[in-house]
Length: 215
Image (cartoon, rainbow, N blue to C red; front, side):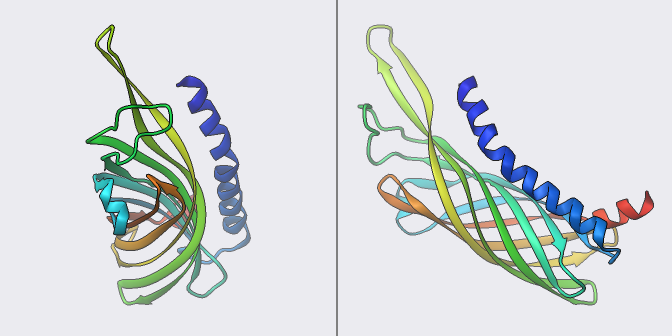
């Protein structure tokens, strides 16, 4: 498990460094107010289509940034989706006899999107579309009949995704409240079916631009 976690972090590290570099560069080159927000959301990711045959929604979280581009409404939106699902296995994995029921599957998916925001008084309406990828973990179980033990491990499913959606924000000064809905499509199979879900989240977007200005 330690080796697996180390391998996963090595693969995610370049993506995180890229997003950090873009954030620092944009903030350094522009003095436009409200240029940078963090995004912290929680909610559910609802599986749709045949994905619902093996997944059920559980509590999920998202972490992201809204990075203003130019002086209009365009912004860059890198977002890490940490979705959780109830996993009801339909087909046993190769080398395994037993199918996991009511297990837990989690995602580590980074999407980098281009968005546009329209501000009306304290309200803002935005849409975005982008692509990315990462990992989806699905549980596996093996039974040792001699020792009466069940051994659990996770299978790592590499996944490329596309995601598009929209949201509404309400400004409270130093932060925005927001709600967001999107559609996420995976380009590889899980349980012999494509991965499709509708993440729904609410949360806050602290205004990081004001923090940088105070410094």
